[in-house]
Length: 78
Image (cartoon, rainbow, N blue to C red; front, top):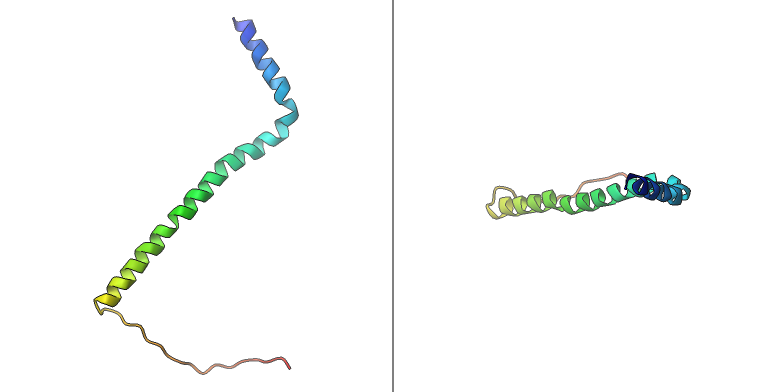
């Protein structure tokens, strides 16, 4: 039984030997891509909460939106 298991393991390692250089890349992509997906999904939560807070502050008249114009200097290349 033990010899059969060793033979199976040895055969597996022989078959995988040509792909050894790709194993770290596959593992890192397998771990990195789900983390990127989760991060992108969770990044919308704070933005949503802040937009709700800003709408509440505006509705309760704690804050107001003010538009103003400023004099600016522009550098023009002629």
